[in-house]
Each structure stands twice: as structure tokens, then as C-alpha cells.
Amino acid sequence: MEDSRTLPQNSSRPGGSQDATFHPRQSGIALGLKLLSLGPLLILIMLIAVVSIVTPAFLKPVNLGNILAQTAVIAVVAMGQQLVILTRGIDLSVGSNLALATVIGGLVYQQVDSSFIVIMAMLLAGAAVGAINGLVFVYGRLPHPFIITLATLSICRGLALELAPGHTTIRGMPDAVTAIGGGTTLGVPNSFFVIGMFGIVFLILTKSMVCGRWIYAVGGSPNAATSMGIPVRGVLLSTYIVSGFCAGVGAVLLAGRTGAASPIYGNLLELDTIAAVIIGGASFLGGRGHLGHALMGAVLIGVIRNALNLLGVDVFFQMIAIGFVIVIAVEADVFRNHLESRARVLQSAAVQ
Image (tube, rainbow, N blue to C red; front, side):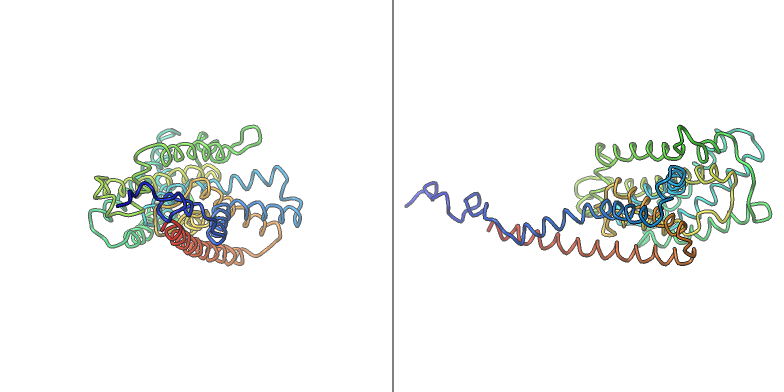
């Protein structure tokens, strides 16, 4: 009987020369996947190029600073939203949460002239709402976080309107808050440095820490994560707390930039943050997304709005434009999933 070790090198056994066979279709799909992964950056570069030609004022330092300042709130809240979406969830309460946090901060400032206490009040208020979302979803065994976050969207907005004196804007914020949200350093908005700091923290969390890998694992397959011993409930709860905390940070930035607190702040912010995350390449199916892409998605939204403002386009049309961008981003996600499935099929066929 012939020893299997004497089989020729070019046999069809795994590891033979057929593994190295060139597959043009597989190569094309791999290239398509690469282009899709770079999609947000390519779109942002092309958009900036076109807008700078159409409206030369776009590239002026003052306008670029305005874009950074206006995008900061969306960017920081989108970071928390991304963690939730990575676990196959969604947080619809971030806009109302932000409004409630600013109102609480404004009320605290009326009683205590302390920047630290006002900032902590806003941060804790945001985190508390996130904790409620997570606790009810995880331990209340709800089928989807859409239910509880939709409820807290309404509850937080109602509380903000009820708590605000005269149901309107509360004027005044501590100097430190206005410096963080509205000040500049060397011509760069301070809010940009806040985003940079949080971006570094989130990057380390998602790429270098075990808890970050747990988030991706839970989003990829909750059942598999449970069988691996990952504390799925704790991971889910933590993502909603972080999302709420980020809404609190957004409250500090927005209250500082406007020098006020208002129960109507954060209107449709939940849609902007979801759009930023999805435009950035994350998937509603969970387990996939990159922090840098989410930030690019936030900048992309800011650039679109700024360009439309410079062109004198009506604000209502801006909402329509953002809606179309969301649809395109979701379709790109569906197309990317299809390409990945095809790539896996071809790779499996290549080794058989």
C-alpha cells in the first residue's frame, strides 16, 4: 500500500499547489472589500475637494474651526453610540439625555458656583440614564433595546422641559465649561482636544483591552460569547452606561459653546450619531466597526451641513440630504455583507 507521504506536491490535498491558484473573481471581491473599508475616507476627501471648489470660503481657518466645534458633540456621542451598535443594540435616548443633562447642569449652577460640580452633575446625569437603559434592557429581558431607549427618549425630554424654569433656556454656565465647549487654543477649538482625548481612550479600549474584545465578541455572536465565559450582561450594561456618559460629555461641550442649558437641545442627535456610526462602516448586525471611521462619519455630516449652509440651502433640505446619506450608507453595508459572503465561499472552494 502506497504511503500517503509520497503523494506529489501538486496534488489536490490542502497545502498543495492548487492552494496558490489565482482566482480573479476572489481578487476582485477582495479589492471591493478594501475599497468599501476606505469608503468613508474617500467620500470625505472627495466631498471636501468639491465643496472647496464650489465655495472657496470653506477652507478658511475660521470656517474649519466652526466645523470642528459643531461636529464635536456628534463625534463624542457617536463614540458611545458605536459601542452600543457593536453589541447589536441602539440608543435612541442620547439626544434627550443630553438635553436633560444640560438642564441639570444649569440648575446646579444656579445653586452652586462651581465648575467641577456642574460638570460632574452633567456627566453623572448622562451616565445614570445610560445605566437605566442598560439595566432595564439586560435584566428586564426586553427583546431589543429599541424599546427602553425609545421610552427614555420621551421621559428625558419631558423631564428636561418640566425641570427647566419656564420650560425654556437657562442662561449662564461656569467659566470652565464655556472654556471647554466654546474656547480655543492656538486657534483650535478646545472641544477638538476633548474629542482627541476621548478618541485615544476609546481606541485603547477597543483595540488593546480585553473588555474591548469582549464587546466585539458579544456583537459577533452573543451565544458563542456566553459559551466562552464572557460576562455578556455586564458587557451590555457597560456599553449603555458609556453611551450615556458620552451624552453627558456632549452636554458639557454644547452648554459650554452656547453658554446655556436648554430642554430642546439634542433634537434628532440620536439620528445624527447613528448616521455617523453607520456611514463610518459599522454594521447593525454587530461585531464590526472602527472608531476612526465613526469619527469620519461625524465629520462627514458636519461638512455636509456646513457646505449646505455656505451655499444657502434651506435647513429642511439639509435634513433630507442627511437622510439620503443614511440610506446610501445602509445599502453600502448590505453590499459589503454580500461581498464578504461571496469571498468566504470562494475561499472555501479554493482549498477544497
